[in-house]
Image 1 (cartoon, rainbow, N blue to C red):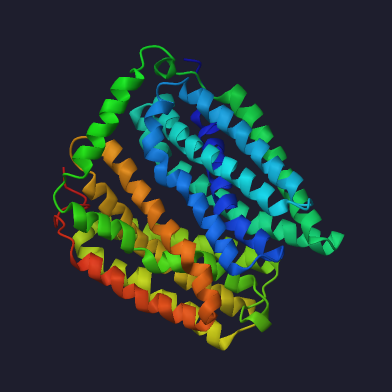
Image 2 (image 1 turned 120 degrees about the vertical axis):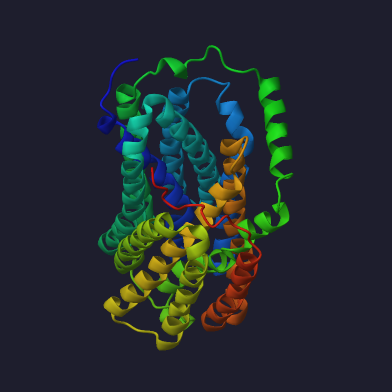
Length: 423
């Protein structure tokens, strides 16, 4: 294996992992809103883009038998760059909606496949000590990519719109810029990524054996104790967030005469894309520290309250309609901090449920349910909001928080799970 300093590729590969996801899931919302699409259509179309992450575990075994992880990483980055360029090209056309959705689909599937390959390559390209040491680094650069996407790219499109006085042209230019960035990342990683001996095309399992193992994994997953409760928890714990996630972004940028706060793209990039992501990150860090000290069972209910009660921030914002960006940013920070803290319980439960034989494959199936838990509420969120208005919608979100408490109350968790054990 050609030796490469992990600093040369680990940060950049996880930065590359974060950009397409945030582009498909968040940046697309703002773009479609600026181009005049209704909230019903925006949430319906973009929620379907979760599908590649829902079905990702079922095609991940085949990434193992076709080419190397390195090949998959670089090829998917090239495809993502091409998809970004395709979005940029179609925006000024008369068929912009169909064209952009087609390329967003290509980007979503390429991004989900890139996730599989990048995580596998991370384990092959680093020894166990390096894997442990760089786990925080990869998470940090993924978050930086999120801030870059939700914050800087949205703000860039907004500033270009002011300069060019053409919304479509400004978003097209922004996507051309990101396409160029991804082509540069593809070229860089084609050169810098190491070539581990284990990451060869030889000695891999045949397709039939992998298919048999996949069927065995699925069967054992659904034979676990408390399977019904576990799946209900995976699907409904984040139901309020599934409704809120897309509509809250649209609420922030919608015109005031429609009941929104009317933030510009630059203001949105600062409030949600920067301050909000910082709150989310800090909440997640604090949640991890708390759970490691006293275990998941001890912190379950504080985390349930943290992921639900701060949603009332949007009820306040929809009634108060503040124009002060500091007030709005503070509210977003509180909601995102609570979500980050409460989401820790969700992720830890996925790990807890996956324990035992086939734990890696079972965890992958859990992440499919995690994506599905955001996809299903998102499909109807926009239609519900347009039917009742923003204020009533956010009250409905608070009522749906009851489901989070119900599914959490059904869990049976080992009191010692998650605690740091003394040597």
